[in-house]
Length: 73
Image (cartoon, rainbow, N blue to C red; front, side, top):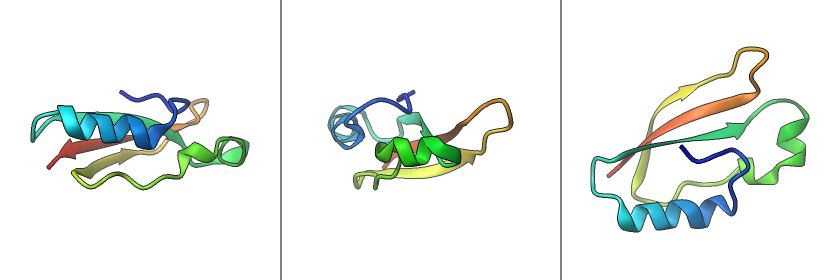
């Protein structure tokens, strides 16, 4: 799992795209609600090609992070 505060996310996922075999699954957390989305600009980024999202779990209080599940193409 890649943390919501991991940075720079784009570089993290580019490296994962290079080293993970096809079919590998990875998840990451991000902030989509509240002040954190304003304070944490790295939450909004485009995934590098090679990954596809297959599940997104929205948070329920007191949790603030959305969890996104990806699969390497």
